[in-house]
Amino acid sequence: MEFRFTPMAEADAQAIRAWCYDPPYTTYNAADEEPAGFDAMAELLDPRSPHFAARLVSGAAWEREPPAGFFAFGSACEVGSEPEAPAAPHLHRADGSMTIGLGLRPDLTGRGLGLPFVEAGMTLARERYHPTLFRLFVYAWNQRAITVYERAGFTAVGRAGAPGGDGQPAFIEMTRLP
Image (tube, rainbow, N blue to C red):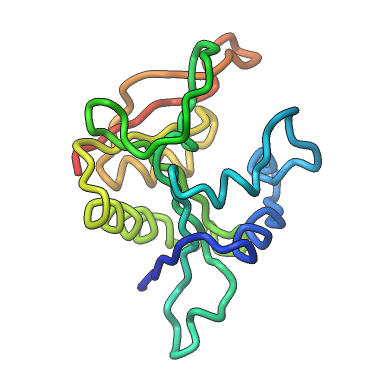
């Protein structure tokens, strides 16, 4: 299974925003309404916290296929536990670590592609950006994703985000060395 990454183009971003996941993963569906002052398309296309479209290589014309997934790097992937003044989009934290975010197209989930996809995206990040540490945030209820991240070598190091109905922060923070 081979994934190829290209910088996010507007057509890729539009395709990704149209993805619709089945329950319980509907949280990942693009919202019809964006919060005031937030422009999802601008974030997807901002090179300061870059996003890449991922395609499965399945023939000579792989680049004309719709995105199979996406990888994002930097501040666009951050989750805070307390309100802060928004910083300018950036790639690395001050310590050289990098936060990653990713998504696999809904029809490709649950088919054993998660681990190779995560590994391919981290290879891209290591080769291009040389982080000192990878960080990601995952919804605490998303055991399917947590299992993939653990298989990829990530370890839970904390929790972040506004508390959910159970009073616990909504996200688990996970890290691993490059």
